[in-house]
Length: 207
Ligand SMILES: [Mg+2]
Image 1 (cartoon, rainbow, N blue to C red):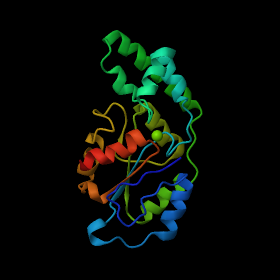
Image 2: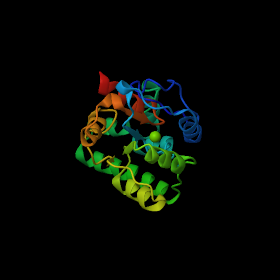
Image 3: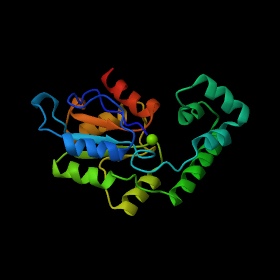
């Protein structure tokens, strides 16, 4: 699971980490006092596949929403990943409602098997000890975020779910968190596992 760092966090190497455990070890072993112009004030995390062990079968979800033939066509046109929420936005209200229901069904099935990613609690404790804020941006539903907070006792704030529009990779949620924290985007790191969502939200923020 690669984790991508905001280009603004200059004193960390811009390389992916294979797991949040490796990232936690790196942060705790090599953290140094921040330089004045690149001070880290907050870290924003993706949820599925980053803070939690991946449990949603996304290809199966896309097949259920799109149908096999359309899934193959869309996948061929989007080799870096399918933006299913964006894809269904142009559908009629009835088709959209059915698609959202299908997506929510897959997400709710995943909730039953929700597990925290190893290393998350240690990393959050470390960030707290450095007074570095932590937020969350996910395209999953609020119900999933609430369950994560309640089940594992670790809270991220703000925690923006799919109900917050526009969702990532639009820069809106990341800018909203920066505004809430009263920090600049170049003082924040984004950590996630999606090339399409979690890197693009950073690129779009600085575009
Ligand atoms: Mg993810």
